[in-house]
Length: 146
Image (cartoon, rainbow, N blue to C red; front, side):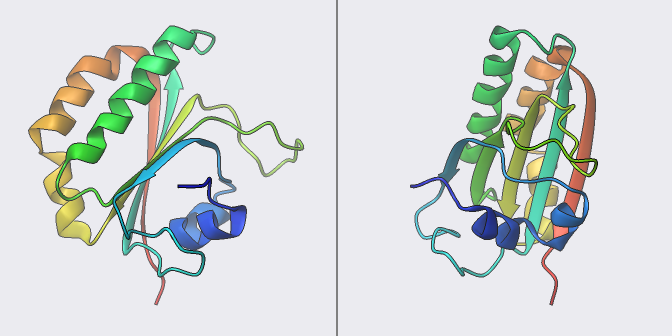
């Protein structure tokens, strides 16, 4: 699947992410077949965007371990797509926060799917195995606007 364009990303992520000043930061994108691939596709009803600040931000090993762990979350049944990103090397502007280390965006059909994800054994194992890597986590859960 090709890397999504900025317009495609923002249509998927919803207005809440755009308002927060968070642009696309593609390291890798995976989506299940037929899910939000075509430009102009309907946005996912619920987007779960997590920003991680690593304890050791210069550690490629820590970053790669976290990226691999996030990708594994795509195996959870209610996850419809996964986007893992790093801060983009774009023009510095006052509205852009590039202080974080790794971004996780997960797509769900609804809030019930996201709730099931939160207590899923794979998610719980991910947190237990990787939480020593980060010092801060911020979550944005966004519903598609009508």
